[in-house]
Structures are given as structure tokens and as C-alpha cells.
Amino acid sequence: MPKNYTLSLAHINDTHSNFEPSKIQFNLTVDGQKYQAETKTGGYARLSYQIEAARKRAQNTDQAFMFLHGGDSFQGTLYFREFQGAANAHLLNMLKPDAMVLGNHEIDAGNSPVLAFLNRIEFPLLAGNMDLTEELLDKEGRLKNHPMLLDYDNKQQCAKFLLKPFYDKQIAIVGITLDQMPLIARPDPDTHFINAIETTKNTVDILKNQGVDHIIILSHLGLDQDRELAEKVDGISIIVGGHSHTLQGSFSDLGLSHTDYAETINNTPIIHASKYAEVLGLAEIEFDEQGSCTAINGNNYFMLDEQIEVSHLPSSKEDATSKTRESINASSIITAEPIITAEPIITAEKVSKVITTLKAHPGVLGCEACAEVHETIMRDYRPALNALEEQVLAHIPRDLIHTRLPSKHFPHGSEIAPWVCRSMFKATKLSEPKLDFALHNAGGVRQSLNKGNLSVADVLGRILPFELPLVKYQIQGKYLYQVLESAINSATNNGVTGTGAGSFPYTYGIRYFYDGNLAMNHRITLIEEFQQGEWRKIDTEKLYIGVSSAYTAAGKEGYDALLKAHWQQDLNTMTLPEAFVDFVSQHGNLIENPLQPNVYYVSHR
Figure 1: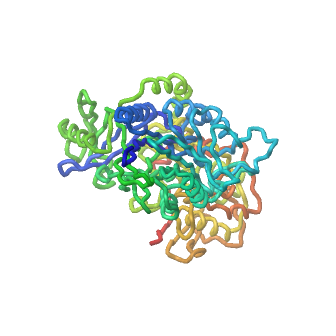
Figure 2: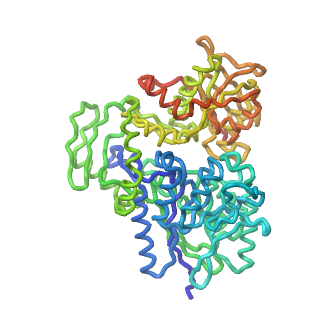
Figure 3: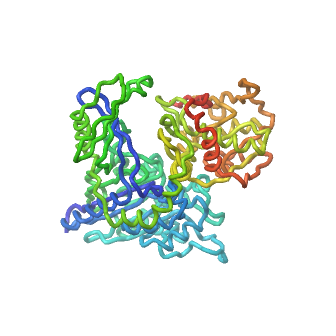
């Protein structure tokens, strides 16, 4: 009997239907010069190869192996829009996870898509704090008692859990998802979500009483709530998380955020694996007999193309148009295009050194891929997307960055969300001439917009993948103060337990000023409307007409004050992505010029 119980663990989360490799940019310094390296990473075929390699390494050393998914497989790309979860189930089956936890995007459209997913998958879906005891008995497509679902056990007040052999013991996997689910998704009204911390504590206590000490919490709570869970519940061996899109590992030398892999709180390591199938988390873990983690060694790993494009990283915005580019393949060097530039010429030797430095990073793997998974994607699913990619809407003259929250480099936040708001405004104005503003949440925009041709596929599959109707409404000015502050507080956890940075608000037609250091309910210091060529303070008692997505208008993620509207009306003829498609196809040339900022934000300290 081993004194230490070792586990080889692979994990992913928030893959959002990104079956093919995704674009990625790294910023790195080589010999004192700053460079940008652009390539693609991840995708299901590369994930499959690396997971299978890790599984075989564990088998060869008689070590336990596990592969877990931290939720949010749904949404995100055209693959989901076209196949509504069928491709997700098929391809995940090929990756052979031991379990997946229910994410909020799995239940965006109610319980029915979850049932269809459960009917297709060959692994358990864990939702240990989803209470189905009040599910209607005559309901078509009930989830309760589905053999592939481990939900809440109302009699024992705990999560149903998955037990697996673990040397001479057993190891438990417990799936815990957001108890704020009704605020962030659209579960059926007869489906409830029990407090995550209480459910976890009760479940851990029951497992301990049964002699099960090795306990994995497979969480879709986000890093902040995972930290709280680890702090408040003793006896968790490890938390494998998702929802917050957190890249863990030492990647600051590649221009990416640095968050420790396996951050440990109350003797419980917490591990996440970024987003969009860009990385794979791999960990070698040792536990003692009591289930405590005694050692963990791992990282998030990018899986990069052989083809990597290298350019000088501009030192200022003025230099942005003077980059030189050169592309290199592993087997051959491609001559640089003759571009007039103020920067030093990038020689083939420099390019090679940048790529060698990038590939030598401890968090970088190669592009090896499972041929069967790749061929399945290309044969069964890719052809349906090709036609949409051929429909070009406009040429985008420069990169537009989407960031959910304002930051040092983007003090007014996203460069795309305001254009999305403008497109919503433009589309709604056609039928509502008295429209005053558009309001949209940051999480409704999923990716940055790259320079070059913008296709229908880019919009529907990557930037605005949620097929949400637009809703117009009439609301008093005082409630706009409430909704904007509440949404920002929720996005930044400023005095409230939020649902993620996706709730941060962007606008068109109004602008607002927020100071997070002021007392709650006083943080929006000013809202102004644009009327007759100038900005004027809104009247708190006046009625204004606005437009939002159906998701936001339903009061999700801190937008509950929108439910105080005098009236709401669905625009059944126009969805959010359709409004943006129409706008870009007609006015794409306008995007070259930045919009006047509508967000003035001071963070709390």
C-alpha cells in the first residue's frame, strides 16, 4: 500500500465549442528587443493527443489518471449555433472525460438542451447543487433521475457524487455549480440551485463519515468563489475549477497574466485552465492517507502551431503602423514582405530565436494532434461553417480589443462593446424613433475583433454567438442609476458577491461616471444623455426608452433594476448578432474611427 496516493490529472474548462485551434498572441523580449508572436493554439484534436499521452504515461507507471471538464462546453462558436450541442457531446465523448460539471452556458436556453446533451454523452454530468425535487411530474423532457446526471440529493441535503477506485481507497468527484444560476442563465422555473458552500460542506462531511477522504470538487464557480469555498470548507483535497477563464501559471514573460498554478487556500489547491480550449491543465498530485494534498506539480500548457508570425512589438501607438512582419515554419524560413518601417528589420536569425525562445517556455507544447478527432471535425461539422465564412461583411482596418473591465491600458474598457451598443441602437431606432440609449453587458461580447475581413461567421460564431432577441423598454432615469451601479458592483465584487466580470455595462446614447470608492448606492455620480449635439445630465424622474438583449432585460447579472421598467417589448424581427451584422455591412468603414468614450470608471481600492 503506497504511503502517498498519486494522481495524474488533466483538466479543461470553458471550452465554449472551440473545436479548432484559436488565435493567440504572445509578447516577449529577446536580446533586449520586444517582439509579438502570433499563432494558433489548442483545439480538440490537440487536446485529445495530449490527454491520451498523459493517460498512457500514467498507465505505464501504474498511476491513477483522471480527466475532468470544469463546465461551459456550450455556446461560443458557430459549431454550437449550427449543431446545438450535438457536436459538443460527440467530440467530448472522443476525449473521454471522467466527468464534467454543469456550467451556466449549458442552461442558457433552459433545461431542454441539457437533456439532449445528457442523452448523447458517455460520461456523467455533475450538478450537485441543482435541486430537481420540484420538477413538474408531467413535464416533457424531465431531468430528474437521468442516469447520466448527478444532481442534488434533497433527502440527505448533499450532492450526489461520483466514486472511483483509488488504490486501496476510493476518490470522490463532487460537481458544484453557481448557486446564482437564475441570475446568470435561464434554468426552467421548477429548477433550483442550492447554496454552493453549504452543499459542499454537507457533502464533504457525509463522504468523510463514509470513510472517503480523497475528495475532488469539480467547480463552475469562478476563482473568487473557489477561494471562498476552500477557505470555508475543510477537507477538500483539490478544487478543479472554471467559469472565470483564469489562466494559471508563469506566463508574464509572454505578456500574459500571472496567476499561480495550484493556488492553495486552507490546504486545498485550486486549479483552472483558461478558456476556449486554448490550454490543457496537467498536474501530478500527491495526497496523504487522509486526503490532504502534500505535493502538486503542474501547469497550463499551450499547444502551438508550427507556423508562427513574428513582428516587432510597437513601443507606442504611433509605431503600430510601422511593424515589420516575418513568418517562419518549423521546416523553412519565409522571406519578409518588403514593408517600409521605422523599426529595425527582423532578420531570419532573429525570428528563429524568438520562436525558439517561445517554444522553450515551460508552458508550451507542440501541435501534435489526434487524427481521428481532427478528421471527425472536418468531415462532420466543418463544411456547414465554410459557407458562412465566405460571406464577408466589411474590412476592419485595425484590431479592436475586447476587455470586459476597464484597465490601465484600456481605461474606457472594451473597444468592441460600444460598437455593438451602437448597432443595437441603430437597428431599434428604425422602429422606435424616440429611442434614447442602448445598454449591453460585456459578457455578451466574446472575443476581440481582428484587423482584416469580417465575415458572417466571425460575428455569429465568435464575437456575438448568443442568438438573443433585442428588447426595448421604458424606464425612469433613477433606475438607470441603480442598474448601472448594480451591474458594475456585480462585475467587480464591490460590496456584493458578483456573477463575474461579464456583467460590466457598456452603452450608446448615454455615458456614465462610476467611482468604486464611494458608498454603495452613490457610486454612479453622473449619467448624461447625448441630445442636440451635447451631453446633458439625465432627469431621474423622466422616462427614457432603451434597448438591451433579452438576457440583460430579464434582469440577469445585476441588471434587476431593468425589471422596474414601465414596459418591455420584444423586437421579434431582430436579434443581437443580426443587428451587428446589418450595421457592419452598411457602416463598416466607420469602425476605423474610435467612438467617444461612454464609460468613466474608477476602481475601488
